[in-house]
Image (cartoon, rainbow, N blue to C red; front, side, top):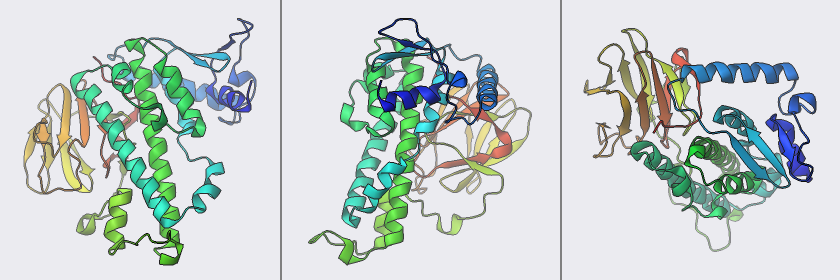
Length: 353
């Protein structure tokens, strides 16, 4: 077994069956706990995942997954455990940093631009699955395997998922896609920091490659940096939603709470007739049971002011599951913030068919 495979087994923490011997087992809590810190933390985390699953008990149960990974088979009872297992793979590997620091400014900008294109492609796949209930197995089959990095064994993970012929494994595919997009965003942040600390010195650029005339504007376009200007403020108690991952929000009672779409202030009015209110214009958007898409696209449920340029065309999905709970999924470039006190917990990206 390779070092990478051993490393993966050390942090997944589920039963693993060796395909050669047929019956050998591996449990992370009985062996290495280097990814979790201790067996107590492992137990607590699993307990939290179980409780979180109860919050979304109306969601269709996912089919157990067996992933063929090299010469072993990894088993996941639900997509919640799969989500937990992949969480450690969302950071940029430290082994990549020296290579990134060796790149010229032009090469850094080109890499950042390529990542943006990938992010937009993956977002379109998720949007299609969430809006129209299309199979992720089919949608992800249109993606080139080279779209996924070999870092953190992501390409191997997606290749193993692609081998499954079951649409019942779509919750796992959504988990993997959401986590991979978080990895891409973290890698983008790493590139951005390297780029910004080095400045725009022409001597560091490739010979013959011109530097941007207006660096601030150009850099914002490349790195998807929000330009909030006058709207920039201290977001007291406001928590940025992780991209592409559905988050449970408490909407019980008849009160209201503020949220921000790319820095623009809105209010969520709870109660028997929930509303999303634009605090700048006072415009009200009724929320119906099921899936509500918020953004600037003319063909969606809740179209906000077209002058809000930093708001994405399909920015936020609000799934009204009952009178107490809503699931928010941020699909934007410039983010969504909600009160931390309203957050129930994270769940894997899964839209009940």
